[in-house]
Length: 350
Image 1 (cartoon, rainbow, N blue to C red):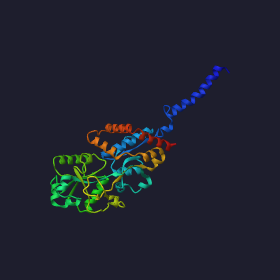
Image 2: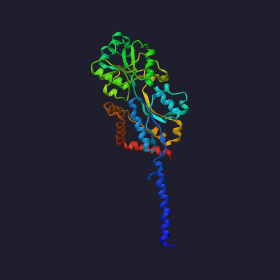
Image 3: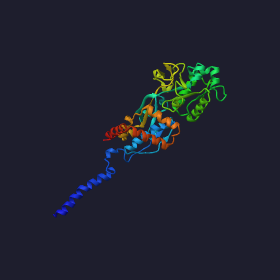
Image 4: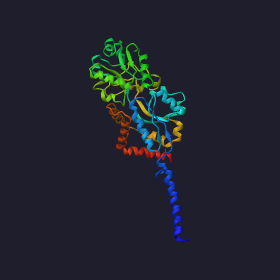
């Protein structure tokens, strides 16, 4: 065999496998670096705006693993959990437990699970009133709204009841507020406003700026506690006694908080648990996608970072492109953390 012919054959033997590897793994990237390549994910996100950032962050991390991530479905809690067990969506990063247990379907544990804890017992929630009004009327708990002079002071629409910025139907907090109105006999004293939360809170802020008393439910992280600072502008108030709702059964101790900044007392009977913020996913999806399952386990986001992003949204950076930019900036500022998440996810897929 001539030397020239021999070299040509050797060349083909060497190059063909390299070309095949190049094509199969996508421009030379090893397949285990993109364990989600060729797989489409169906996320959901909550109807409250403070949860949008986490959905976008999780979706971006999944895209970095090679997954194709669809635009999220915006769903109320009960519809999300039913859709999850049906397999219509794969996950969301907006689980609030234990408060959401009352809204999951009977077959939840068979078909779905909490796949990761993003923030552990960091989501404080409860009732706040403007500080000057709380001091003037000596308001300590929601039972004080039974007093005629307190009802009148907080009655913005003239119906004889104190107005409370509450939660829209379908939110977990709406069920707890309804429970409180019943067990503390407050139906004739308090009017829970269940319209869109952001609009109702914007109205409350306007009334506060005009010097009027306000009464509202909120949670952290949220822009509300940046705009109306507990201890300075508003005060956390409690409930007269601990009577757990269905979703709070077994968590009676967690309904009392100690050393809460801006609270009317310490300890304070909040009537609300400090919730975990969780990623919740379909079990079949997790089994078929070990990289995504591991990613869900390891992602943790500081409460302060979520609050800061929520504050930016309140100030006007609230379009989807703004939220995506916030994720890009967070990723850039936490490169080592981000790459660590991806490395662990890739190893789980091998």
